[in-house]
Structures are given as C-alpha cells and as structure tokens.
Length: 325
Image (tube, rainbow, N blue to C red; front, side, top):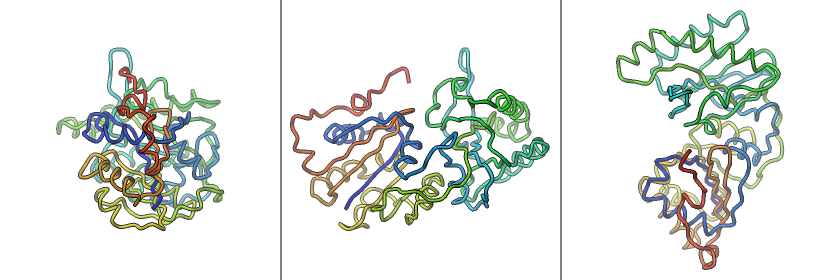
C-alpha cells in the first residue's frame, strides 16, 4: 500500500502521546519544507493553478451540493475574533459550529444587507458557508489555518480592492455585533460569531494534471473532497481510526487521507502507522504536516527506519515550532 496523510499541526497534537511517534517518523523520512500552507500545498500537488487565490472554494462548494456555474466563489467561514491586548486574533475552531436555525438566520440577514452589492451567502450540505460574487473581486486572501492564533489584522484581504473588502468586513462585523443569534449564543456560554473569514477565492476551472496514481481519497472536509473529485479521484469518508484504515485497504491501493489530528492521536493512531511501515504493509508513506504558512513533506519506507544516522527528534524539533506561535 501507498499511503499519503495530510493534517494540520495543532497544540493538541503537539501535547499528545502520539507526538513522539510522529516526530520519530518525520525525523527518519526524506523531508522538505514547502513555503505554502497545507491547503495551498495540497492544491499544488493536485495540479491546481492559483488565480489570485487557489480556487478551492468553488471546488468545495461543488462537492457541497452548490451549483457553482461560472461565478466567483469564496469560503465565508463564520469565526470568533478574540480581543487581545492591542489586536484581535483568530480563534479555533474555524468555522464555528452552530445550529441550522442560527445559520439560516444569519445568512438571511447577511444576504438582505448585501443584496445591492450582488453578494450572495449560501450554505452547503456540510454546513460550510460560501460567498458567490458575479465577478472577481481583485483581492488575495489567506487560508484560516495560517492565521489561527495570530493578529487578524495581518491577514486581511490584500490587492487592488483591499480597502473596499475591509469595509465590507467591517459592515459584517457591525451587523453581527448585536445580532439576536449572538445574544443567544452568549447567554448559552458559546463564542459569538463576530466576523467571517474569506478564503480560497476563484472560479471553477477544468481538470489539470495531478497525482494520477491515487486510487482513493479519504476526507470529511468538503475542501479536500472537492479537490479530489475535481481531479477524478474517488472519495470516501475517513475511517473510525488508523487500524480500520490499514485493515481495509491492500497492497495495490494508493490511499490519500486528509485527517484531523484526532485521527492520529486516538486509538492506535501513529503506533499503528509505525507498525504497518515496519511490517512493510505500507511500502511508501508520505506525510504532509501543515505548520501555519509552511508545510513539511516527509517520505518513508521501512528502510528509512534503519537509517541510524538520522537522529530521532521530538515533533516540536522536527517542525521547528516556535513557542511564540
């Protein structure tokens, strides 16, 4: 089996029991850093060419049951910006979970407010929010994984129309500030939805050349499901745990997985991955770890584990994680 796993670094993963095993695997592999976030890097691997952004919103919306046609699409994730000493920082999770009624109410009010600007907010089957525009907005955005925990001010839209879109975001924040949905959430002890995070803008494009040997993509996130489907790769949900994944697929499969960190930390997790590599059930293992605005890619076989001159390192050391982040 060939197995490719992509996931985002989180504090939970760094603090988990699996961190040592994951650090060991990464330190034994042939590793290279990419100056791209995880979503940008995987889009590049799958053959997506950037427009102003990598146009992942259109692919995700299509997978999410939305008719995308030739409109311009952005992800419009509802988020909570936390007031720090002198700035607002983007907090996890992105997007914020909410009830169907809350989502429908907010979307209805947003659409009414921005009707004159031909801005249409829609919700996909997964619950994700998208923004449809009649033409390109001339902005470049940042994926939320890059900005989590950082000052949101540094990651606002850039480009020729940046000031206009910062004004739109200010209007959105004002609309949300005293919204009844947020009053309800605050009374329930839930984080309020005080902004939207725009990312992944673009129009749907024709399929390009990508990793043709991938036989199956396992993902729950519509971004990665849409990306794989666009490339003509079959899609299925991520199994319950690593042990189930390894028992389900055989030597002829090249399985590509987008996993939440919990997939590596719960149950057998990374220990099962190491055991399968040692036993040669996995002939080739590729790991993509998103670390804010960079991605580490490591490639291993069972022979990689025998390279004694590659010193085993902690996950923090391999990823060069700075305490300030």
